[in-house]
Image (cartoon, rainbow, N blue to C red; front, side, top):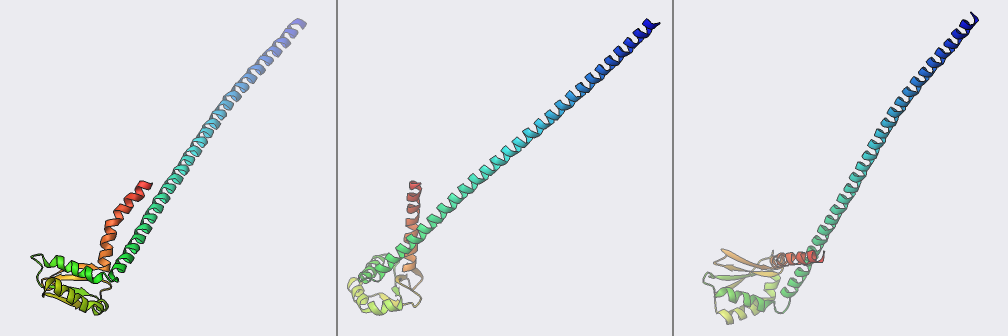
Length: 202
């Protein structure tokens, strides 16, 4: 009986140890599965955070590059506009210099002479600012009479600020050589060439 009791105790111990070992193994296995899941989730979150950070960095870099390109374009446009403005001012200054020089009267006589030879040029009139007409009326009349004979009249226009206009067919058509019109014409002609030069320099 003592032996059976001993065997029973041994069997209980063995069964208890086995059960404990099985339970421990199950706990360890569950812990390993849970740890693997936690590690996988953490890795996924870390990968997502890295991908988000990389995407944000790329967006920031692209945004910065776009802003830099736009600033460069704006600067170039501003520079071209500044050059065009300076060019117009320079052309205007030179046109005004010609229109206030001693050669202004001969320039008018030359332009009128060229128009007088055209068949559509009937009843020519030269329109000048009042101040210019007062200064040059006698000189122009003598020069035009010597060159063309009769048929050209001189008229004053208080709104003209430098330059002259040639009116044809009793004022039906005007050819504008005012300082403003000539400056605009020359600036429009020169501006694309200056822009092309600026583009070559880029």
